[in-house]
Image (cartoon, rainbow, N blue to C red):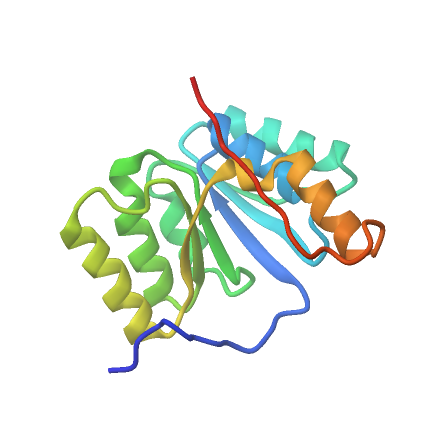
Length: 175
């Protein structure tokens, strides 16, 4: 079996995201991704219908279209099955990350999953083996890498406003 160490998939001009989990981290993800060119959140799912409405209001305030809203404990299955979703972004509780990521990849979706992607070595193996078998990307995100400052700096570098970047350093400090 081929590994996923150098997995390459055809590029997507527009990444259609299904966002699962709209707690604090999910809502912040929704806000951050509203500023990323080439990405659209077109489907959202949560167990709480009120959060779905709040998320759609935030999308509208950012100038984006409302997303298809799916409510209920099992709504994430529908996100994984949708033909109009390329990437399932998982922002749920830790205990569900691996199960959701595996199903999404088995249904042909790429996966972004908030930390931690797995809570055991066995789950780590399941994620890697599923990515290898399905040839889908599965990556763990760390939300601070996508905050406003980091994304604004990246955009300035891409536009050449910082000259030629030859070295940079960063830090992530918590209390």
